[in-house]
Length: 252
Image (cartoon, rainbow, N blue to C red):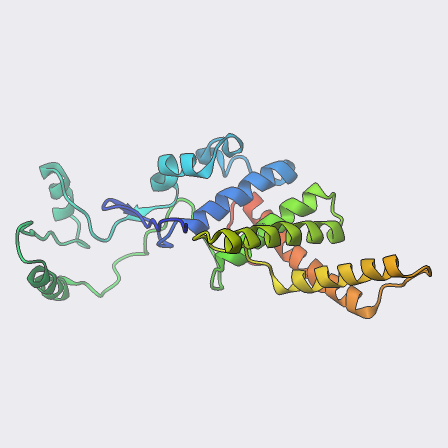
């Protein structure tokens, strides 16, 4: 079953509007701590604590507000002292809502009040969270997760790109088949096209070796696929390096 979306509460909210990008940042950091701990800026990540001993679902509820969140655009005020703080905030307006009133009418009234009191003039620079996800392109979580996993497989296979690609493809394909066979309501693992092509060329070469008693050379199709896959690996490594210095995902 797909993970339930979480964008914050009525006090704080996540700028990205969902949890998954922050899960990926956390997991890239854990991998960086395992693969290249000497590159990780420990001072930058000191407020995160020792993530190597944590699971994301345990770590996130304790840390999301102080690390990633901004004040919610709508807040439920629960005390007089809290209300006083908002009275002094030029960017806020306090609205009373009758909890027993007709919802449809209240929504329309809320829109009218907000339109009347909305301030469209920027007064200051926008607030930024302590740790901000930065990307100049649209973030594709499935693509980023594939990069994360392929880095882990590459590390496990000591940088042997052929073995790492076969291992990732086999693992992802087997898992996706289980989803289909068992009719699980889960998202399938994304397999990038470049890895599919390279895995196919690897298998073709291995089959030729089995079927031939002569020495078989790798063809242009194999080397072209390997080149494209290497480019994909380098992009994944760039993200890991970005994370190591405190940026996610950054330019890659």
